[in-house]
Image 1 (tube, chains in turn purple, green):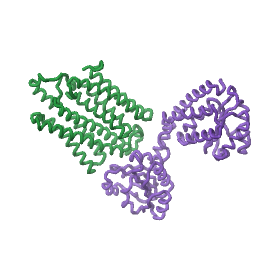
Image 2 (cartoon, chains in turn purple, red; image 1 turned 180 degrees about the vertical axis):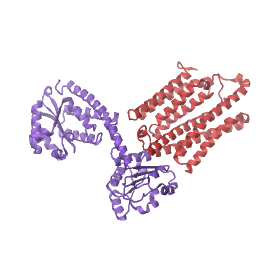
Image 3 (cartoon, helix red, strand yellow; image 1 turned 60 degrees about the vertical axis):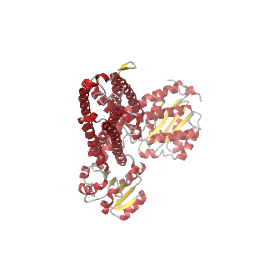
Image 4 (tube, one colour; image 1 turned 135 degrees about the horizontal axis):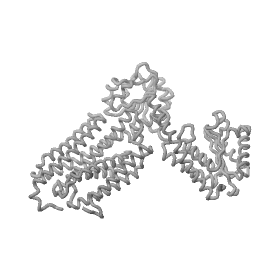
Amino acid sequence: MSSSHCELLLVTINHENVSLEERELYTLADEQVASLYEMLHESPIIGESLVLNTCNRFELYFTTTDAEDGLSMIFETLSGFYEIPREEVVSHAKNRSGQEAIKHLIEVSAGLRSQITGEAEIFGQVKEAYSRCQRLGYAGALINRMVQKGFQAAKLIRHSTPIGQGQINISNVAVDLSLKIFGSLDRAAALIIGTGDISGKTAKALRSRGAKEFGVASHSHDRADTAAHDWGGSPKEIADLDSYLNEYDIVISSTIVEEPLLTKESLSKLHPKRKNRPLFLIDLGMPRNLDPNCDELDNVYLYNLDDLAKIAEDNLGERRNAVQTSQDIADQKSVAIWQMLEKRGLVNSR
Amino acid sequence: MSLLGLEDRQWIFLATVVFTVTTVLGSYSALKLHRKTGRPYTLALVSFGWVLQTLGLYARGLQYGGCPLSNRFELVQFLVWSAIALYIFVGPAFRLSLLGMFTSGFASLFSILSLSLSSWDTANRTPIFGDSPWIEMHAALALFSYGVFGTLALTSFMYLLQSRSLKQKKMGGLFPFMPSIIDLTQINFRLLVLGFCILTSSLAIGSVYFTRDLESANYSLKLIATVGVWFGYGVLLILRLRQTLNYKQYSWACIIVFAIALLSLDAVDRAANKEVDVAAPANASSTRL
């Protein structure tokens, strides 16, 4: 293919323009990606290509000698591959070309176009897609330069703006706060009171960030035993809470109670034996499991569901505020990358 | 005295500018840009300021042929120099986020204060600790321990800030970049032990000198102030070891005892000043300039 007649195009089907039901039509298993590449490259007018396939988006970056024919051929191929009428594919897809396609790649890689603004997982997914594309031999000079420079721009956005800062789900907010108290979670023991879904998620989040020692307490010994087996940890009964509470540094409570499990008075009795060790109480129960007055004790930090939700909300707000700045950086960088590609004769000069 | 074309105060002024710039950059980066200035940049800037300050103090030292500890300005500068030296040489082992920014803030605050109050920098004085190398060693160690206690006051302040943010659930400002409260309490303990050991060594050296030359120990105010500070930190250490104080009380105590220690420097300066005035006629012929 002559580089003097090369166009860069993007076809994207994502959560921004189609519903979940419609996105499901484009589900692509990892092992099917190679077949799709093969079908696409049967046509001589397709030069290089990159397929990005995640749960929220199907994207195809490709180069072609003729934009109109190339696009038409791509829709034809996708229609055949997914067995969806061509008109439907066309209606689901959004197209971009040239510098706009590069800007889109940067924004996607930086998490600006993710459903949860600023999430970091997408960067790994784009990297994985690029790596597969290279392995299969469909990345050439243009895709290679575009993606590598695009990654640099995405990293710049993530490092120079708050787009990815602060946790935005309650379990991770709780873990971040634990880190602000204990520094490293491998030296903090966690007690999970209640065996519900949110307790499990928080235990999982704590474990993923280094927590090793767990206790799982329930009203019923059998439930505690089962959850302790599933999540890892030692089973405890809530009735004996006072006898083992001092062994733990983080307490996550989300059970059904009629009276608070811990009050300022009950903690005051146990507190001297802690010898100034901080106690982080996370009350995820409704009604609240822990007396709000517990917080009045020194070295005791109590957060309830509303507190954590507010922090998550504030963090999300910070990320949203950073979107405009991030888009400006993506715009500037995409222009620079496009000019570099033009200079090297990899794309048509405008 | 001039060194490499600049007067001692000019070198110290430049160092103060560098410390202030480091503080402003660190604060702006954290509070406005929501990102932390990298530790290597902060360390490089603070080290640069420290080198400038060292040149200034060296130029002063040449004037006396010994440690420049002849007035309040020099005492404060030496204390700041010690705190910065501690940050540069021991700080990286602490791995405490924002310590560089806080230390440079501390340095610029005290440096600006000492530069602005011209009465603190009275000229043509003899070193207030006499001319014995042992007593200079005693004084230098004592002031270095004050530098350590200054850093301890800073990390205590950081603990109080972080603990307050956690209690009041205020997650903005410096909170995301501050170290954990457990890290801060551990560093506070190490700094207290380090400072106390250095001050004890200083007093031990001083006491040997005083017993050799009992007449020199007659600045009772200085002696009481210095031993008082040593006693204060000793009590604090015992209370910390016995866990009698909670971390909040302990942090406040570290800040208060440091404030008292600073006031004791004033007592040292006054006592020595009085002593020098009394001894001036006799020493006039041996004054080194």
